[in-house]
Length: 496
Image (cartoon, rainbow, N blue to C red):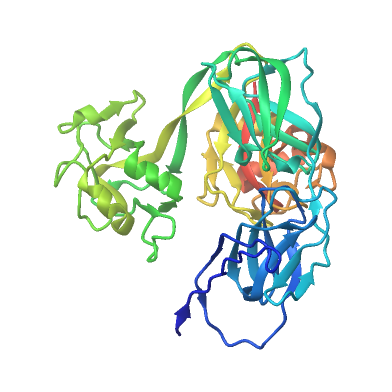
C-alpha cells in the first residue's frame, strides 16, 4: 500500500490561525476509514507542568491547525503519532488554574476537552534528616511535600567538590508527596547546599546539610552466573553449552544468560571453576557449540602442561581459569554458535564474576548475602524459587546451600528481600511439596506488619523457622519454597 507524508503548514497570521509550529509528523500508512469528526477523548497525564510531554487521544488529528492551552496559550511543539494520537509539550505560560484544551481546525471550528487539565505546583515541606544531623553517604534521603512527581533530578557534590547529578531514574516514589534517593557513597565530606530541579526548570535549594562518607571498604565477592547441578564429567562432550537468552531454539544448552551477563562473557572478564579427576592430566577447551572457533587458537587447550598461567590452584582440589576473550575470533561466533566448555577429565563447578561489595566498618550490623536472584522471574503461585541443602539436592531447586548455611536457615533468623510487581502481593513460605507451610501464614495483605518497607521500592521479611518445628522437619527432604503472588525475590541474607 502506498505511503505518504503529511505535514502541518506554518500559519503566520495569529488572528486567523494562531501559532502552531514545529510539529513533526511521523510517516503514516494510508488506510480506508469512515469519516469522523475532530475529537478529544482523553489525555495523559492530566496534571502537568510546562515543558512536560503529554499524550492526547481522539480522532481526525490531521485536521488540526491550532492547539490552545488554558489562558489562551498556543502550543508550538507537538508530534502527530497517528490520526488518533498526538504528543504535545506543555507550553510555558499556562494558567496555574488549569482548564480545558482546545483543538481548532483551519476553518475555525474547534473541539474542547471535557477533561480539565491541572497544572502542578511542587512544594517542599520537609526532609527525613534534620538540619543539625549528618547526612551519610550511601543512605536513603527523603524529600516531603506536594506535587513532587515533577522533581526530575538532584544535584549534590562528589568527593572532589564537583557537581554530581542523580536523575529521576534513581528515585523511589510512593506517590506525589515524597521522593526518595540514595546519597552517593563518595559524597563530598563537609557542609554544602544541594539542589532539586523540576521538569519546568524550577530550582529548590536543600538546607545546608553536613555530609559524610561511610567508613568501610570494598571487598570482592563472587556473583555466579551459573552453578553446575548436573555433576557430569567432561569427556570431549557437549553438555556444558551456554547461550544468550532466546538464542537456544533447539534446546541444546544447559543454561542461557540475560543480555547483560552475556555481554560480560563476550567483552569482560569472567571465571570458570572446575574439579579435575586427575590434577596432572586433564584438558579444558573453550570453543563454540559448533566446535568452530576456539579461544586461544585451534587445539590450544588449557592443561597442566599448557597455558598454565591461566590456571589458579585453589588448594582444595578445585581450580579456576580467568577468561577474557578480548579480540579473540571466538567472540564473533558466540551469539549464533553458543559457548561450549569441553575437553577431558574434569567436572565444571560454575561460571561467575567478581563484584565490588561495600562493607561498612564498625558501624552496626553487616548484611551477609547467601543467595541473589539471577532468574528475575515473577512469582505467581509457582515453584521456581525452591532451595535445598547440597546433600538433599534433586536438581529441582534453584540453589543448593552448603550444610552449614542450610542448618542456619533452619535454626536462625534470616531475611528475604523482594520487589513487588503488583499493588497487591502475597508471600508464602512452604516446602517444595506444598504440603506444609510456615506457621505464621501468608505474608502481605494479611500480615502487613511482617512486610517491612525499605523505602527504595523493595521490602524485606524477617524469618525464623525455629519456632515451627513441625515445618522444619519437612525441609531436608522436601526443600524450602518461596511462592505466592505478585513479587520477585531479590536475595536471602543473614545479619551479623
